[in-house]
Length: 337
Image 1 (cartoon, helix red, strand yellow):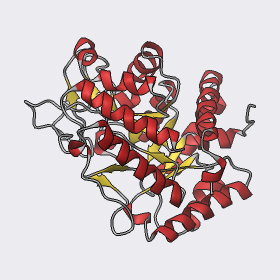
Image 2: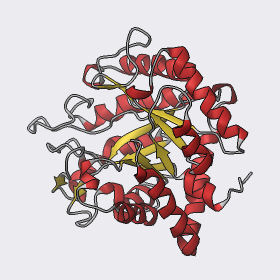
Image 3: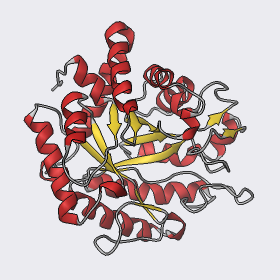
Image 4: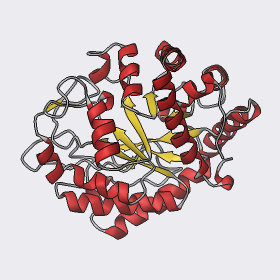
């Protein structure tokens, strides 16, 4: 059954937004009621005790429901190790991907994490990291990767994906097409990768192809400039990488999302309206803006204007919204709070 949405709703569904506060508040009223966002992102600044998080998620979903808005995706980064928003004593802490050596390790992490996320009303985990490190490079992902063997990364990553998905948590593979070779942090500036597509095929893309075959719900694009693939645009804004490589060549039909547009790799090099236009052209479904700022409203207005004024972009938006709604439909009713 096709969901009929207004122009504003279609624009809003394309946004995943951050906010301030640990309880339902005017920030969330604005994001959901006015901007009609498709989902929200939880960070440490939003998290209290489990009952407080559960109430936050429940109140937020109730508010969206009261306005006739679609179910919200409520997402978090819970990789374990360096990147884990939920911490002891209320939640299980894991040492991170470098410590996951066997399939049983991966399955245990995913089962426990899925159960804890469901218990508080979170329905998407921005995990697993599928970046393949290089033993000869002091890459920024060394503390977050499964390692330098792409087949081992694929095996452990898909075990997590399949377990999260089986337990009604939408999984997200990141950071396509792989940032294990980078030494510059894209939170600060725009890294450049010089390898060509053959080199990526032989290593970096192997785990992502496995993730696609395992039914991963989402793929997050990196803020990295792969100059031999697209000399003008980072992966997160690239028609070639997002549409031609990931969708057409690798046959991925699920959600495609940017990394946070607040990061220095984007803000230091591209105007927000330019970034939004490129994301729409690249058939990227979800645009992440992870901190409260006027950029969220500006992005909503830009998306709404572009899909109102350009019939071809409106048609692409309809397809993106269908993918978003299909992902939301996979969240079990008893996990929707």
